[in-house]
Length: 154
Image (cartoon, rainbow, N blue to C red; front, side):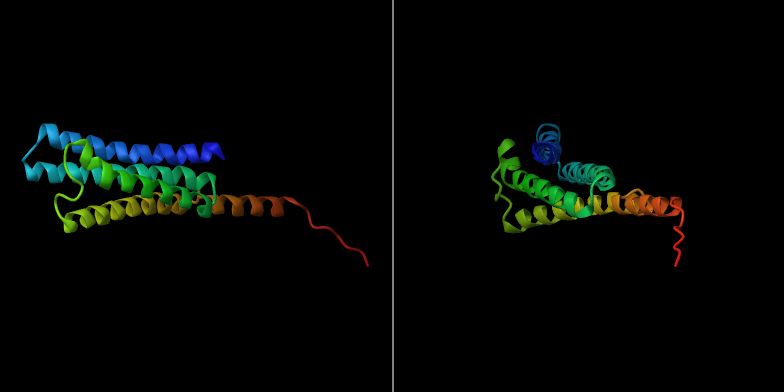
C-alpha cells in the first residue's frame, strides 16, 4: 500500500515540477514578454499531458481502470492545488493577482490538459489491446480453448 501512495506522490511532484520549471523560465528568461510566456505555458501543458499519457499507458496495462484512475485523479488534484496556490508564490507573485478570471482559467486549462493527456494514453493503450481488461479476456480465451471438452456419459 505504501508503494501505491509513493507513486501517486511522485506523479504529483513531477507535475508540479514541470509547472515550477515553466514559471522559472518565464520569470528569469522572458519576464515581460507575454507572447513567449504564452508559448512556454502551452509547452508546459503539452508536457503535463504527455506525462499523464505515459502514466495512463503504463498503469492501464498493469491494473484495472477503477484502481489507477482514482490514483491519477488524486495526483492531479494535489498537483493542481500546488500549481495554483504555491506555484505563483515561488516566483514572487500572488496566486490571485490576475483576478478571479485568471485564477479559474488556469484551473480550467490545467484540467483540460490533464484530462486530454490521460484519455490519449488510455485510448491508445485500449486501441492496441494492451489494457488490463483486454489482457484478461485474452488469457481467458486461451485457457478455455486449451482445455479439451469433457465427455459426459449418461
